[in-house]
Length: 96
Image (cartoon, rainbow, N blue to C red; front, side, top):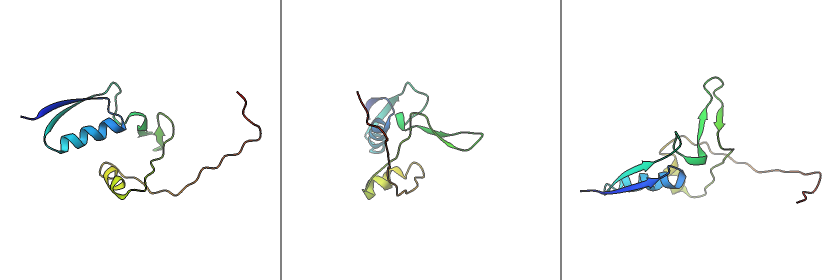
């Protein structure tokens, strides 16, 4: 009999944990998520009218230099490699 485990939330960390435990074959996993989607704040979807990718909780970029991590996430979807940089300019100082 498999040990039953409950994962509360299907955000990035919990989803990876649930998947890894389930794939081991030793556990039965129940995932409880209050939102209508998995992925937590990394959730995206395509607008059906424009085909534009919508980042529902703000923009996010997945970065890793580890090949094993890259191979793992590409099991579940297509990721595009990007080379980028962040540029920011400000004409006045921030004050608090």
